[in-house]
Amino acid sequence: MSFRLGASLLVAMMLPALASCGDDSGADTGGDSGGDADGGADADAGADADADADADADGETDGDSAADGDLSVEFSPSSVSLRGGRTFTGSPYGPVYLLAEVRAGAGENVELTASTDPSVPVEVNPTSLVGGGLAEVFARPTAALVGGSLSVSIRAASGSLVSTDTVTGEMVDMRPGDDAQADALLADFLAYFGTNHPETGLGPASTWIERFDPLSALVVTHRLYLFEGWEFHLAWHNTIAPYDWAYITARPRDQFQPTIATCLPSQSTDRTVQEADPSDPRLPCASE
Image (cartoon, rainbow, N blue to C red; front, side, top):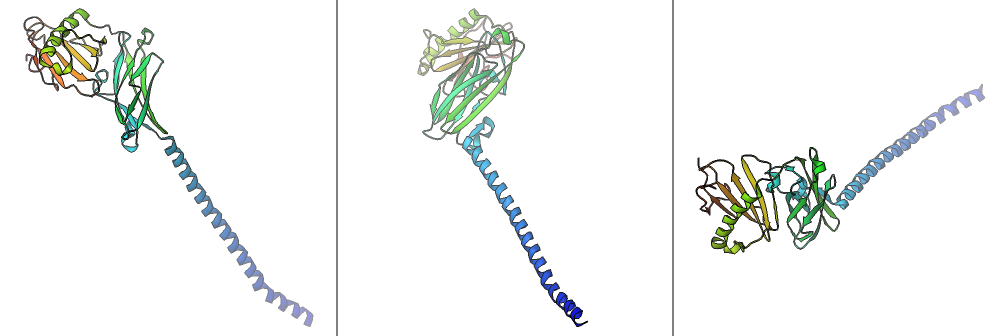
């Protein structure tokens, strides 16, 4: 009897110690588990930070995120082909002519390239800029694209930084207007520029580098003439006098907006060239 009682007392004395061991084990397990969870969270945060660092290292932005980076490129809505928007109409009879604005830090050298989808001949001018500026892109669609679409992209790179922009337009069988009529009007405007705007260096003897129709229009015909340093945008109203006005806007090719505009009241009855408003070059020549 005394042996059994002693054994029972011994077991009773050991139970709290065993329970305490169990509690410590649970605390250790919980602590380890909590440590693992915290470590996993730290690892996830580290992975996120690494991913962010990788994204920053890529340095690639699109035109819409220009304000967030040190380098950006974006096609300008002031491009005649874009008509103030983000789409264009092109044809196999002339290039899609686009202006792009490049922003970069002072003194940064930026390399420029252009591409299209589907692939057609394309060039960018200039191919490099220092500190940003204006670039011209000429994409030259082929007849095989009529009825389809064309995407034009520009890529700017400076060190590890890269920025791109893309615009898309439809391809139509848009034949240019009357070249002889356009050239005759151009001659009148060039004669005026030679006398009244000698700062442009343009006059009756000036020779254009490229001539093409940048817009699809029936009532008003457009023609773009590129000279060394200047773009002439000629437009004329296809109707009868006194409503058959014509105008030209002149834009320095390193700027986005025209700085000079001239117009004439009538192609058939009054070809007196006069100064016009660059924001509405029909005025004061257009009759109400």
